[in-house]
Length: 184
Image 1 (spheres, helix red, strand yellow):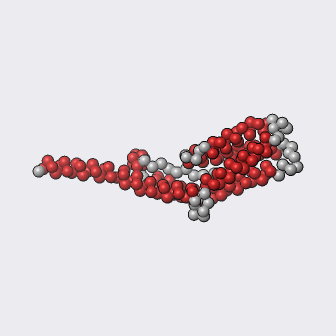
Image 2 (cartoon, one colour; image 1 turned 135 degrees about the horizontal axis):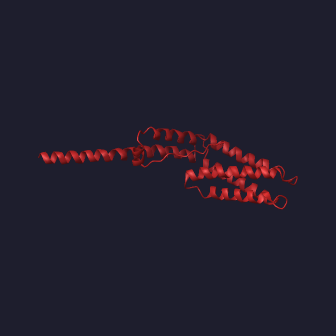
Image 3 (cartoon, helix red, strand yellow; image 1 turned 120 degrees about the vertical axis):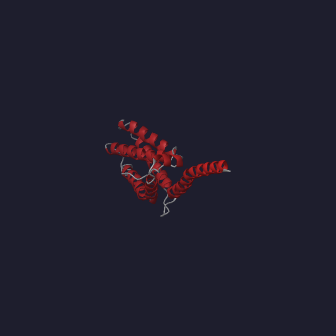
């Protein structure tokens, strides 16, 4: 009888030890999903992915405009290629939020560089207004992304995740921090 009590106690202890990471995982996964949902539509109804799509469209329009002037300014060619690569990277990173955030930032940087070079290029009267409008559209969308409540939700989730005293426990729970999309 005494042997059964020891075995029972060991089994119970093992179950309790297994339940802790499982419970932490379930709790953190639920919190993470709640924060992630605001990526699709935050508390104002704004969706970050739509903002990124709008930035990609404006960047593609900037590329189209710049291609018209590569004969007049050969420096545009490399910058066009950089922005085109950044846009394609952004378009293909939809299944990894961290990659998508980094691609969005790279796209903004490449668009800014192309815009700066277009300012040094003599554009036709009809085209002269477009670089400013397109970069303003990209900046406006990024401003909306920066102000999205998703970023606050992600930071709040990450802060909760950091409250766990042992990285091992977070590792056992199998939940990773969320990336934000706000940057200057």
